[in-house]
Structures are given as C-alpha cells and as structure tokens.
Image (cartoon, rainbow, N blue to C red):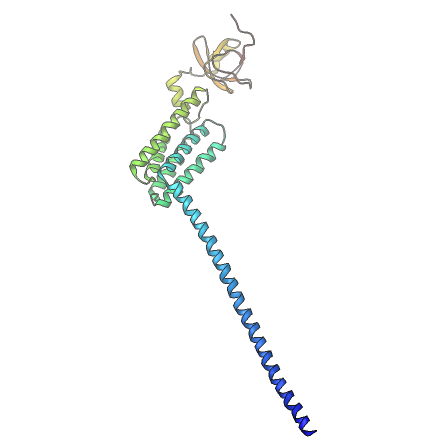
Amino acid sequence: MKRCSKFILILILILSVLNLKITNSVKADSYNSESIFPVSINMESLSINDTNEGKTLNSDNAFLSFISSPLVNTILLILAFTSLVVELFVPGFGVFGFLSLFSFILFFIGGINTGSVDIISMSMFALGLVLLFIELLIPGFGVAGVTGIFSLIAGLILSSQNISHGIVSVSIAIFISIIVSYILIKKGMKSKLFGKVILNESLEVKDKKAEDFTNLYNKIGKTVTILRPSGIIEIDGKRYDALTEGEFIESNVEIIVSRIVGSKIFVRRVKCQII
C-alpha cells in the first residue's frame, strides 16, 4: 500500500512537470506566432505601398516629361494664344479664357520641370498680363498695350528650353492667332483690345455728334459689318456706328434708322427691299 501511494505520488509529480512544460511551450508558440505574423503583414503592406508610390511617381514623371517636350510646348502656346484671342472677341470671361489660362499654366509647369523658367521670365510674363489688363480698362490702344504684348512674348521666349525654339514656337502661335483674329473680324466680331487699331485701318467712321444724327432718322442705308447688336452702317456714302433693336443683322443688308437716342443710332432691317 505504501509502494502504491509512492507510485501515485511520483506519477502525479511527473504529470505536473509535463503539464507545466506543455503550458510553457504553448505560450511560447502563441507569442512567436503573434509577433512574427504581424511583421509579415506589415512587410507585405509596406511593399504594396512602395509599389503604389512607385507607380504614382512614374505616372507623374511621364506627365511632366510629356508637357515638357518641345512639340507639346508649341501646341500649348498655340492653344493659349488662339483661346486668348477668341476670348477678347467674346463678352465676359468664359470657356476660352479658362482654356488659355490652363494652357499657359501647363506650359510653365513644363518649363519649371526642365529648369528653363526663372524669376525673370515669370516676372516679364506677369508684367505683360498686367499691362494688357490695364489696356482693356482704358480707352484706345497705347503704350500699355504695346509694352504688355512685347513683355508677354519675351517672357514666353525666355521660359522655353532654348531661345531659338522659343522664338519659333511663339512665332507660330502668334501667326495662327492673327489668322483667327482675321477670321473673327471678317465675321463682324469686334474686340475691345484690337478693335480701334483694326477699324482705323479698314473703316473711317464719322465723328459722332448727337446734333448731326437727327437728320438720319428714317433714312435707309446698308450694313457694312454684321450687327450683333452693334456694328457699322453706311448711309449716303458715310459710315456710322449703329445698334439694332436687339435683332441680328448680317452685313450688306438694307436697314432703316428707327430712332436716335443722344449719340446712338438705332436701326432695323428693311422689311421690303426697295427697288
């Protein structure tokens, strides 16, 4: 009986030791799994983040390289100049104004990427824009307008990758802009900035005085330019600025003076052509 009790006691001690070892082993395994597994996840997520960042950097570099190329620079300048010209012929500030501004911004971003844009070129371009804006606010076309144009052009040339490429790109953009301006003027559209220069060369408009226009009431003439609603008319061989009553009248159409308000001549389309 004593031997049996000793055997049972020894067995209990052995089982207790085994149980303690098993418990410690399980705890160690669980600790290792908890510590290693998150590290693997973090490493995996880190590699994914690095890959995404690499793709973003590559796409950004590709875009900057694209807008920095000489061909794209020229296209951006053409878009900027032609959109600006069209905007000058359209009342208010609309789609073409934003398109011109956006094209100029992309042009300068490309220049900054290549290192060709500096404080001098940016300052000259900004000065040109300010002078042109001042010219829009004052009557006529004078020193501010001419200086603004030359300053803007010089800023763009200096912002190009090299001077020769800048001169060629700006020249192409200006040439296309002149063609667009000519087409718009032929269609009868008037620009606040260029209107005086162009009209002084092509049309000799009579000096407007209210007392000289009273005798034009009910007289018949024809439109020289499109009236939308303002434009040029001709009566008895003399040309005048005129307004419609709100309608759109094409060029070379017979009109009649409907009323005189101060120095303003209002006309309407002749309903029946007079033979």
